[in-house]
Length: 178
Image (cartoon, rainbow, N blue to C red):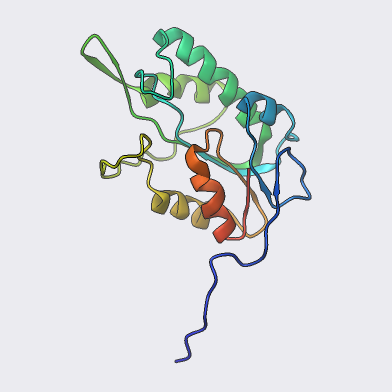
């Protein structure tokens, strides 16, 4: 059996900084709502992200839970507008902690998704491995989502791209990350 040399990228990618459907990779630096508003209706095949859990980490300001949910609802509403009819959203969240009480965020976010016509198809629980990086969403899990839920050339969006892990992973798989 012949083993071919493989490169990480199937083709050279330029990186744009605003949404343009003719581009392959977009790394937007700014408010995700501004980016989402620039994306045409029903143009994304996959949205995969892990927004802050609102627990007061160094990269976020802890908000009252109701304010956090209102903020998430705005982003989720724009994501659903930009999602294709056959697209998928993978919204990875953890727990919100308030005065020692643990509130699973997926349970309080579910009504927002449901009100927008989406149905929960699965819950995934993954093994948490502590690293120095504040965000622990495994790239291998993202790779599985991209491979199973998209085709070559489809647009993939990470609303909160911590370190552009999703953009890199999608580029490796010849999908279009944002």
